[in-house]
Image 1 (cartoon, rainbow, N blue to C red):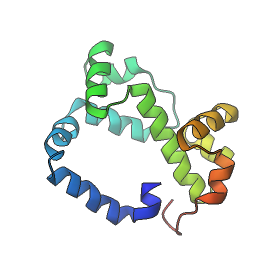
Image 2 (cartoon, rainbow, N blue to C red):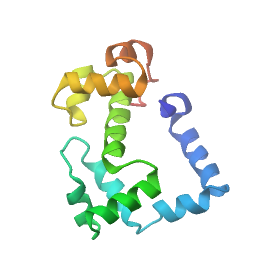
Image 3 (cartoon, one colour):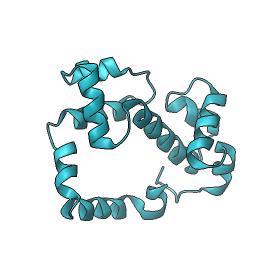
Length: 143
């Protein structure tokens, strides 16, 4: 929803300001180029619609499952599974706000069960995907 309000360029300015501020050092360490967690997040972004396991992510960046989980949580303050769920729901919310059908958006980000998608969406956003689709509209070209 941040992108819906700020637009891509304003959001980039906000990220830049955060990185230049006091929080920037830890953010750069957590997500800097070549960082394993950053690479794992990049991989997740490219395959939101596919099932992914912690073991697969850990192996991809050369860590044990336990070490990966700990480092991921240190960097993002979320477990890997919660982070994936959040990415998928945020992506679906943007698609819905951009005019995509709720069922299509759910499938597009990897949900097979529409009831599970609706439950998790409502838990995260406080309203059903249908309510969201009627309340949140993005300007043309932003979805």
